[in-house]
Amino acid sequence: MKGPLVSIIIPNYNHSPYLKQRIDSVLEQLFQDFELIILDDCSTDDSRSIIDKYSSSNKISQIIFNEYNSGSTFLQWKKGFFLAKGKYIWIAESDDYADTSFLEKLVPLLEDNPDCNIAFSESYAIDEYNNILPDDWDRNKGLKSSVSEFDGKAFVRARMLFNNSIYNASMALFRKAALTYIDDRFMDFKYCGDWYFWNKVCFQGSVIRYNEKLNYFRQHAQKVTPKAEAEGKRFIEGKYVIEDMVEVLNLTPIQKKVIVGRLMKYIVSFKHFKTRELKNDIIEDVAGYLGYGRSSIFIYELDKILNFSRLDIKKSRYL
Image 1 (cartoon, rainbow, N blue to C red):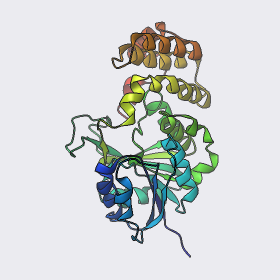
Image 2 (tube, helix red, strand yellow):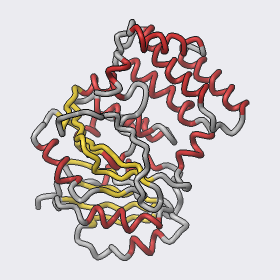
Image 3 (spheres, one colour):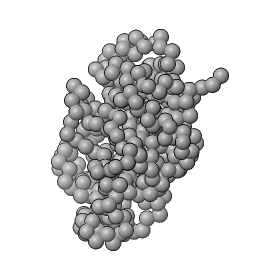
Image 4 (cartoon, rainbow, N blue to C red):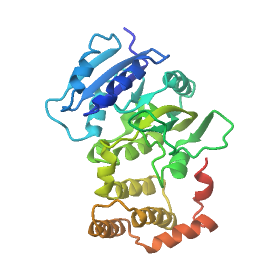
């Protein structure tokens, strides 16, 4: 029996206010060759009652309610990967939603380009009431083409060294076969596992970006991100991701120093740490691990002007 072309994984924890819209936006996709896997990580709100209402849908292949909270969305990702039968996987986060044409537009990009392991769209940032926010993280203004294709390593070098440009799992569709070559280290992270994971997918082939906003990335008070950032997890874990990229891309010491300078600048300017002492501890931790301290900020700023590292910082921001 032929399996579905796409496996859609919804990992949920306490997102009941947004869950119906999320599930409906999946089931209403114009492209219908998919299975839906819903994984609830022992939610304490009324998520279960909402999910149960969809149990009779013939598009849902698995509904699993954890007896205990795993404490990690990335452990839920791994569980979903094991259950997925499709050629492609879409991790549809439970507090986001998608345009009904999301799969219709992204699936052909992977089908027609066998060397491509991941295709992703741009995203709107929205609030808890579905209002579109002014934040625009895509930085692709002025592009005339609807599709941009990159060599995977070139994409990581240009768009992933300083920030995770695949900043929301819901915006991406990737080839399941890529999982064969990805280790489980992403599950060790609490905050930066997606950054590490997408890098590993990108390294294996080409990357395609669909230059249209087909995804709605929700910002709300219950998100894990603000708390994790206040505790410095972006920087504590980010240093390991940066070190891995430096090694895989075989970057020079001066290129590494420029990258660390960007990270250091972000840490120094970040205003949401719980305490000043924590901020100082993280600066010391990152400098000790990566080998460069605050002085690297000057190198980063100078490189933006002179480009002596050949990282093309200004150009890469708008690829």
